[in-house]
Image: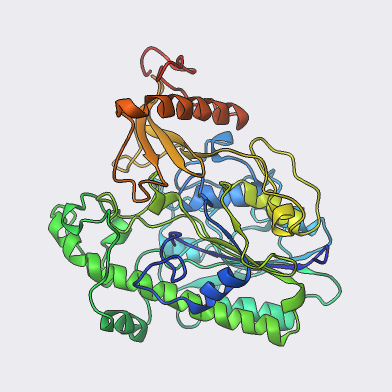
Length: 482
């Protein structure tokens, strides 16, 4: 592998690991992504540490855990003092470029914050997006037919022509073909909003999904038992139309049309991944470029009675992560859990940099190059740090957990100390249908997992409070919340 390969990162939004053809989803056709997985390296246990858009992007850009800055579920503004991934890779001699959704600047989602339309048309100043030489970005939009972006430091936004996924891939391919410097390697990060709701996709793609017949849901989905849907899931822009929040049956009725849109959006991404790969080939770059394909978090899609994200179940935290290209071992699979924070160190490592120090962070670049086994690690931290919006999940209580290659353990609580909530054997129970947390026969496992959570909290410098559990003493808990 060349020491300084070009790096292309394609980050999509709300794609769970399971919703791809090669991962076994019968509802979707993804031949181009399937090819990447077959010809590259695939992570079986890649996790979104904090499964929401803003916290994931914070940790990707800084390599830091969200709890280290008390990052909210939405509305965090990246400090100009943070050293970014763009800067760290640029220090290795790279030209850097960013295309698409940023979501680390505006106050959208908070009281008095910008609307989606305003956020898309408000520039992100250079001080808050440091490290990227070429900028073709916007804060966020969530409207796939009305997206505006800013080119470099222009004060006036440009309208993105056509369907957003197509337009953003076009910008990325134009950079690769016409705009990248020829005297040094480049790092391009393309961030598209699909398949985030509203689940709108080109009509012919949705029709193709519908022609295949009724969707086949996961074993942990009972549409009639869905009890929660975030507002973006039942808004009027979705294929299922506007649902009545006070009547959950209207959400149930919208489920299949919306999920067809979800899968259609994924197939559009796959189609454009094929185009991107052809651009690399026609430009003579395929032999010295590494492509990473990943998502910021998953989509519950009705599993466990829930829609959306921000939950500790696999459909929310499990993300696809594929590495393909120069020096990447063909068909390699990694069972070692990988966290969001590892991506910073791994990308810098792929760029030829030295391991980046940081609590809890691991560099998987040597494994991807075939130079070393995966880093020594038993578990990664899963977390929900803070929610500023009353009425949303985890406003009053938050959660922390750990995931190993086989097991998951999660606690839920407040400053009086989070208490055991979930325990799953993912090998025996991949759909998380049997919670073992109160199972007498699993007490030894629960005690070991609780101790592992304490160790990971200590390693990542998280002051989260835990109540006594399974023979372990309380950790930083107070007698009562105050």
